[in-house]
Length: 187
Image (cartoon, rainbow, N blue to C red; front, side):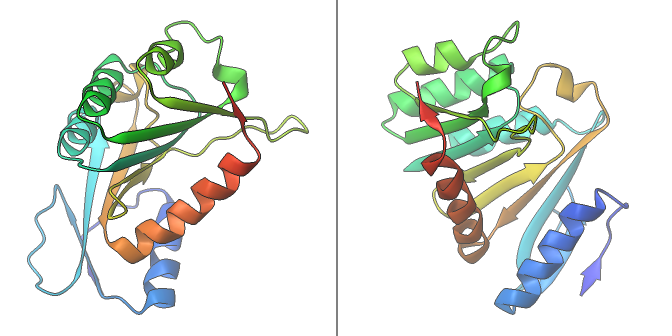
């Protein structure tokens, strides 16, 4: 395995390594998608401030064709919400699970997304826990994850996204998404 990564979030790296070992895939990690190994799992890593993490998310949403599944703690990003609404208009199925405590948040885009026809579910883990996942699964092939919240402030914070383009890994994340949807409330 050849990786040129700054030490990101140790948990993300461990999850990626676990998935790679579980599914027997080869990984070549690089920054900004500059992947020079053929026949390897494409992983792109972006950091904010500096890289345009929100712009990369918007780009991937614009290129989606069938389905986008989202897990979010907080959702205030106008550019990401706008891209999702446009994808919904293109008949891309979109479903979002958000932390119930963030629903009344100032600047929340959840009501706007719901009014646009996007299915919204509120996750309430209980026992003073929060639904803190930040995951987007696009077309059962691409996973976006990392510390980057889908918020306006995230681009100013020290954050990261990891873009994984692999259907097997997308299936694992989709299974987790489905398990949270089953215990979430539709609004």
